[in-house]
Image (cartoon, rainbow over all chains, first blue to last red; front, side, top):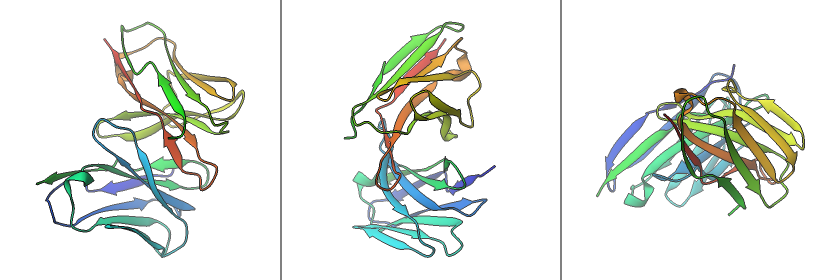
Length: 109
Length: 112
């Protein structure tokens, strides 16, 4: 079945450093979504990418969808302590939305 | 917020007892989901519903059943809880615009 791999599993950075998490699907995706979960909280939708090669920005966050629609990345520029949490990608294949296992980001002030 | 409430938010129970988690939404969304979240496994789909009395299995449905007799309520039942079902359970609804999911606050279940 469809699988979505996400790396790295953990990432620790100093405040001000950049951060990137990557998502790879075993099958071509219709779209990919990104969520953020703060410690002790619930996942919150960030963005959806639909088009091949699409790039979207939200302030310091940049989201990319690969040309083949099988991979995606989230890049945070100059991390802040408010960025801590776990970032999940979720890919929509033929039927269901499949989540990656997430990347847990910690930021040292 | 998306008007989703889960109950109970915390529950401790013993192996072999039945447990029902409730998800209630106020916005008449068609699609509702139950996920479980465990360290190292991310979010895994248990069951979902695409309408009243219309449900289907997800990737980890064994040991779980669901019911949806009203649009606003989606119930998840563990007929006989086991320690492997200790987890945080999230209910979610699908938004009508772009298919994004809105999650409830979660229900932490501990099976002793």
